[in-house]
Length: 165
Length: 358
Ligand SMILES: [Zn+2]
Ligand SMILES: [Zn+2]
Image (cartoon, rainbow over all chains, first blue to last red; front, side):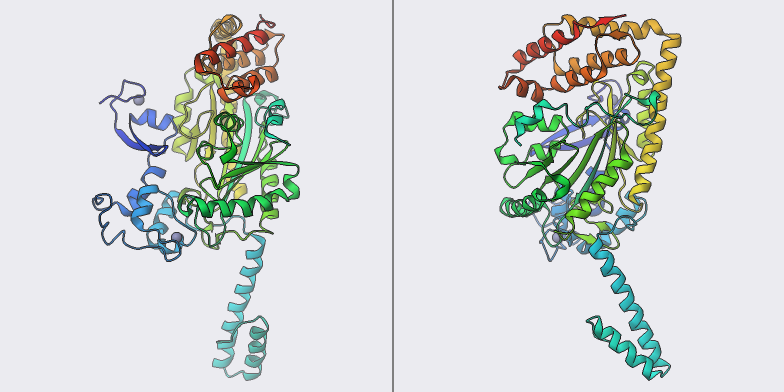
């Protein structure tokens, strides 16, 4: 089959594009696919990589164990994600973290966010970090029998609205 | 402010303005844009939420956007109320995406009067913030859009994870949620047949290259949008800085291509520009594709001093207003395609025939 764009090279890339709910087959050579900005390893194939290791089940049938997991918040299932390539809600990132983690790391420049943080979370983060520090110091104080120090730390943790452990 | 007021403006991405990056790059770098994807905590993404929930989200978010100092004065539009021509018009001005143009109830857009800042509501994500300016202005745009984002987060709680950053409907946007892009006009590279390898190279180093109207469109009028593909694992300034550096290199290639063409193949360039002038000043029927390509050649002619009596801003205006949405909007009615091609040719002919080619 020839590439439907240049009509010259052999079409090696076959995609199904969804436009207005209508699916359309695209047959392109590698050059044309790249030139048109189609990221062959990108969006289209993520769900395939994630959940498409086996043969996809018939539409409407049981999708099998690997896709059976569903998000407790929005009830999206792996097989739903496979169809749309879009997650259902922010909690889906946690639900499907095992599947998404390695993929995100490969797709992006590393798997951890290093950019902007909302101001409200900034303070939250610092507070959490400080609390974790207090809890650690408290355990250490108890272990080394520094009870006065431990009492002081307990007060500080309670002041921050948490229970000392 | 109403939608029809926009027609009197040149559109933020083609407005005349500082084309940063030094004189040699002036005109090659057409416009810069940054988009940020943001979502609300604990709420399903628009594609999964259903129309009723989208409508509730839209009402809540639009109220907040409306009162933000950064966005005042603004135009607030609901997709449901927009005609196909209005949608096309906004899409051509890069104020809504191809995706949003397909939406209906529960989606909308809020546009600051100068069209530099805008926010799409319930596109693929709950919020898509956009900053758009002519020329090479990415650091300025980052400052502006980040300020808008910070203002917005005072009233909304974003879906955010310390590990993964801003959570988005598509995993390709997670992290910073940032998509920076620069539109370049590269007829020189096309004439010396170097544009294809450059696009290939850019794709290989992880950048996306798209046409005039964004995703999945062909490069028409020799316009190419270059943007980052990865959003997680690097800070916003690092992503932006790399794009600036690479786009700067591509623009220098284009400038060199033009110099080489003038030095060694002046007849080729003069013929390319002259033919476009001939067609644009005499054609009675012009498709929008043909108009875009010919106006690109004319733009090159202006920049190389081969055309007198016509400046780049006028060519930009013709380019924008020869697009179907703008053409129909300026005529104030829906026009069938064949009649449209005649109206387009007439509009362009009137302006271009006043110019002369050297
Ligand atoms: Zn091909
Ligand atoms: Zn979910």
